Image 1 (tube, rainbow, N blue to C red):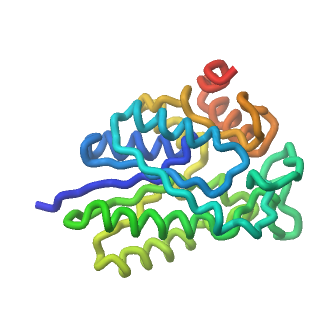
Image 2: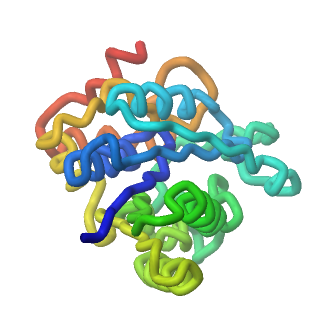
Length: 233
């Protein structure tokens, strides 16, 4: 019998927390670990949320710092940036196929590779499912090319080959919208009230940045209020 484990890339946000809920529901908390990555993000509040989420589910939580890799990046999503974020949707920000201001160079590629090495080391005798919470809305107008289905398929194949077939990349929301993610999470009783999605610096969600707008739209599509709004106010 295969001893299956899971490592979930956990940002503390809505999508990755839903992935964690799925993994725990499937395998039990004793077989799941959460991995968070500090890459120099604009608001490190999400890492605090990731810790709260891990505590909620009772899973082991690990954190890596790879911020130095992006020390030369001008991405507005990094804490070294002095740029003001655009308060509009991802689709509205993409012009003529160019990069949007919150794109961080090959971030998902780095995180997936890091998590694969970590999972292969942590669970050296087990098969591991590596979860990432990307979804279709992340690909709007090619805003984030490292969220595309063909990218995930390609890097997933590379991870599997490079780990003797031991690590399987799982992206349960490819082809699904954020509203679909919320629907799944609500059914699993995911603790959305302790998640954090906002890109802006501050202690409260701004409600205007692209990820806040996407999140509000997703909850509205399900006919329910975002529980994090009051929790974080």
